[in-house]
Length: 259
Image 1 (cartoon, rainbow, N blue to C red):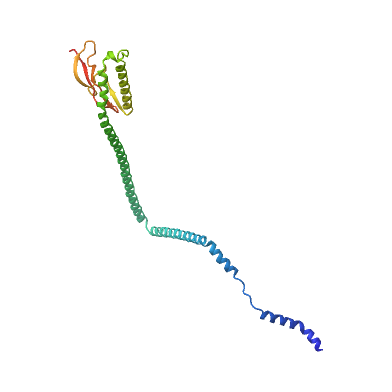
Image 2: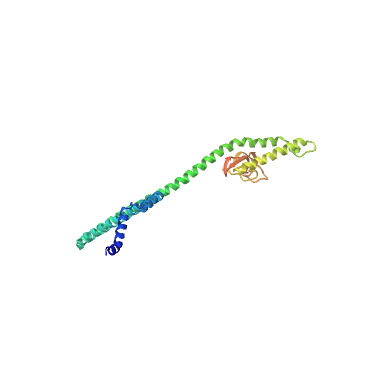
């Protein structure tokens, strides 16, 4: 009988003993996985999280500012509507006239500013053109001074060529050296004058042309029965023009009319 009771109580005893063993077993703490992952994620992506947070705060601030502005606009609109709602017709008409007068004043002010702006633009363009002309004048003056200094050198070519007698210029059989020298000086003169012409300095030789007092300088007059009066028949000194402006007037002899 006692044996049966012990056998019956054995399952409950086993359960009690297992509970006791479980209670006496050392407790093992679980690793804070979530916290470790959170720390790692902060360590790896801390800068991105800060940037996203800053952008979010900026957007929130902008949205808050827009909402505040819209609320202020609504409040002003409601205030103005409530203000005008309490006015009579005469007061509304007076208010309308006042606003119209203010609008006209602003319109006149805008027109005045527009006129000032137009004048300022015109003055600035005139200043640009004036400055451009002054710069060009300064360049022309500098080139003109340099060109005047070259005129004596150009005249020396004419003087050197005039020294050689005309009958010896082409007589290479008897005066070969003198003829070759004349040809060399002539070629040098032509090249030099072409170079000056490329820079606007042109030689004026008005032989046979009509006398022009604005361009030519008459040194003497001689009647010529076979020539038309007022015609240049002799060039005492050639002239030069720089960029279509007379730099030195040619000195000429003019046919005198028979009165």
